[in-house]
Each structure stands twice: as C-alpha cells, then as structure tokens.
Amino acid sequence: MSARISFLKNPDPCNHLSDYKLRYGTDGYKSFNNLFRCFNDGRIKIKLQGIDIPRCSYCSVYQKRLYICLICRSISCSSHILLHTQLNKGHDIAIDVERSELYCCACIDQVYDSEFDEVVVSKQLIGLGMSVKSGADVVAVRSNKKRRLDSQLIIGSKFLVSPRDRREKWTFPLGLRGLNNLGSTCFMNAVLQALVHAPPLRNFWLSGQHNRDLCPRRTMGLLCLPCDLDVIFSAMFSGDRTPYSPAHLLYSWWQHSTNLATYEQQDSHEFFISLLDRIHENEGKSKCLYQDHEECQCITHKAFSGLLRSDVTCTTCGSTSTTYDPFIDISLTLDSVNGFSPADCRKNRYSGGPSVNATMPTLSGCLDFFTRSEKLGPDQKLNCQSCGEKRESSKQMSIRRLPLLLCLHVKRFEHSLTRKTSRKIDSYLQYPFRLNMSPYLSSSIIGKRFGNRIFAFDGEGEYDSSSSSSPSAEFEIFAVVTHSGMLESGHYVTYLRLKGLWYRCDDAWINEVEEEVVRGCECYMLFYAQERVIQKAHKELSYQVISMADAFPFADC
Image 1 (tube, helix red, strand yellow):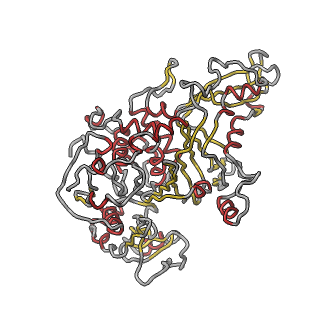
Image 2 (spheres, helix red, strand yellow):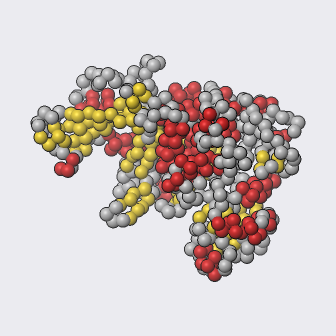
Image 3 (spheres, helix red, strand yellow):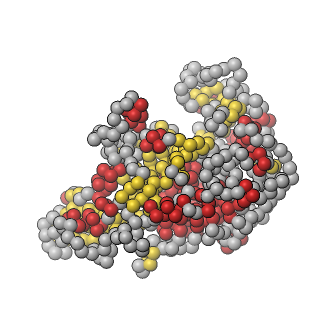
C-alpha cells in the first residue's frame, strides 16, 4: 500500500475480535441477519424469535444493557458479560441487543468492524424499503463540493443504493445525515453534527478553502485533520442520507491525541477543544492565538475565538489590574443545590404544573455567576503597585469581544481530589433560544461598576447594534449537545435547529422533534451564532432545496 493512502483505514480491531475473525470469518455476522430488525425510526435491534423481552441468562434482568454472544447466543447483562467470557473460553465478542454494535467482553468496550457494519447497514437499507445491489468498483471525484461524493453509497467495494430508490425517501434539510457509532464514539458524533451545521465552518469547507485534493500534507502522505473534515463535509452535504462512518477522522484524531486513542467513552467537550486545537495546528498557524497583536486567521479562531477581560481590584486603594485572555468557549458552573432534574421538568410539563420555577437554574443565572465580582482568598493576595505590598483583592470577569459562534459549556461533571469522588449534576437548566449577551460585555459590566457613566475602555467602546461593522450581541441557538445517563456510562445526543425546526441526531438515527423535547434535555454544550450569521445562513445555497439533478447527477445509474 502506498504511503499516501496507508493511513486511510479503519481503526485496528482488538486482539479478541481479530482472533474471532480468524476462526469464524464473517459467517457469525451473517448468521444474525435474520435476527436484525429495522424499526420505524431506522434503528436496527436484535429481535429473538419467541422472546418478546430478552433477559440476562444469569440474573433474568431486562432493564440493563444486554449483549448476545456471537458464538453461543447467550444473553448477558452489563454486570455479567465479563463472567460469561470467563466461564466460556473464546466467547469474547458479543452484540449489543439494543444498538446492534459489536462489544468485546474481555476488553469491556465497544469495538468496530467495517464488515459487521456492512451487514447491519444492508439490513437497515432493506428495512427502509431500499434496493440493495452489487456492482463494480468505482471511484468518482466531484469538483463541485456540494455534490462531490459518489452518487451511490459504497460499502466495501459494492454499490448498495440506487439514487432512484432514494429520491422520495427524505425531506430533511440538506446536510442532515446520521453518523455511525464506531464503538463508544457518540461523543465524537455529537460534536461533529454541531460543527457541520455551524455556518462559518460549513461555508469554509464547502467553498473549497481547504481542499483535500490540493493539500500538500495529503500529497506527502501525512495526516491532516482538516482534510478528514473536508471529506465529512462533502459526505454530509452530498445528498446521501444513509449513515456515514467517520472512521478516518477518528483514526487521524487518535494519531494527534495519542492519550485519547481508545474505544472508551470520551468527553464531548474535551473532544471539541482537542479537535479545534488540531485544526489550528494542522493549518500551519502559530499555536499562540495572539502574537504581536495579530489575531490567528485559521477557521477555528475566526469562528470561535473571543476575548475575556479580567479585572483584579485592590480592596484597600481601589486600583485595578486588567488582563485579556482569548477563549474559544466559556465553561459555566451549574448550581445543583435547588435544581430540578429533567425528569422533574417533564413531570411538571405533562401534569399541567409550572415548567419554570424561581429556584430552577437558568443560563442567565450561570452567566451572571460567571461575570460577578468575587473576593479572592488570602492565598491569592494582589501585589498592589499603588500600595506597595500584597493586599486582599476581588476579581471580575467580563467579555471584551464576542465570537461569531459562541460555545457555552455547562459543567455537569464534578471531580473532588480531596474526597477522590466524581459525580454528574443532573439538574435541568433553562436556556433561551435567543440570547442577548450585552449584559455580560466589558462595557456593561464596568459601566455598572462606575455608575453607568459613558466612556470607552481601552479602545473597545460600546457595542453599537446600528453599525453594520460592529459585532452583534444578539445570538440564536443552532445546536445543543446533551448528555444522558450516568458519569461512567452516559450517551451524547445533538439537537440541531434548521429553518426553525428541531432535529434529534442520535448517532445514525435522525428524527424531527418538538421544541419542548429540546427544552427538557440535559444540555451539556450550547452552540449559539450571531443573529445576522444565522439570518445569512438561511439564504445560503446549501440550505435551499436543490434539484434532484444536482443532488444525484447520475440519474440513470
């Protein structure tokens, strides 16, 4: 294999899966063909004949996650799956009954195999009423990024879907496409869905500003995350609705973040930060966001970079020391003392009770907490230049400059080093779909401190919404990444707002949902865009209805 394409492969399976395939090949996968069932929402689940409710063969429980052994078809729950492989030598690989994903009992982790994925996806296509056929290998290259990928889905080396069969199947906006779970990769899929539908990023990649066919790193056989994202954007906006597997991006990200190269569940927020950092570095920019007062012009920072102002004030003489720090997201503390759980919120809504309570945490309350003045501890005394000695001080944060895209991270995971414990905060957070950030700007915060007197602060001045050149403080939400479940075994899902409608993106499955569903979720990351960015996005070609000739250029294939 040439150096140029040697890294374009699926992640290597674990040793136990490799041993299984050496002994049985793919016959075990195919033997489950008659057990896979495609439900109305597109999900593939295992349905055993004569068994309405599958139960663990060891404890008879049915509420937990269940797995069926690929060899003996014994069903085990998450508490007994390791016991099963210990009692039955070689019975290491199982299938998740609910999600139809491979699971290694010995590694206690999900694993990915493209040949198993082919069996499941083929069953899914048949269940959705599409024809499945074979054909010769074809590689198609499109110069037009909006219809660049092959007009038919390729699995392995076979054509599976005729475009004629797909034309009437979906009415969702262009760009909505499920992402296959490659083994506990819902954290990655959730973030990718949000980034793919972020207008500045979408326009950047679809306009060819980073073209993988012209990238010098790719021609030298080097890994390039922006190139992998170029593939994903092309795939998502190709008009194909069948679930896509972002295996190349996962592999490339693993090579850049070796400490996270595992099939274990990762944190979506950490992946988001890591991915943006890798994009920044791969574009050849300086790792310093601000150097000689010049801002980084990579797409990461042009879209997400803002500027925080920190004022530390001496409580004795009142002198203030000011520093500025760039940010690409803001992490907010969630007060869970009097918080409502999402279940409480749904119970109130369905019972006719109030859905909003005075003690319920709100996003505005979190932002108020972030920008409030706080007294620093005695170990953080300010070396006051006016007083000539260390003094007690107070600190206040504010936002000097807002980014085009505002990512707000809700801190739901707490880790105590002293108690050596970790927990998840399940409290419901009330957040608006339209957000006015004016109260949290430096001009507003400092204005209040000095009695709202009007003056400029270090040249930043006031935000003037009437000026076409001034940044906007009005934001609209376009994506919400949620986390459900426990700290150790949770699941990430993204809700996307497109043309005023909400869509739930749960790995490979996408469906339209009501606004109340989104408001009642356990939000973990909130993605807002400046109002005028959203308004402009509605007019973009990639969100308009395209003709079938553009979506499927090979009409007679």
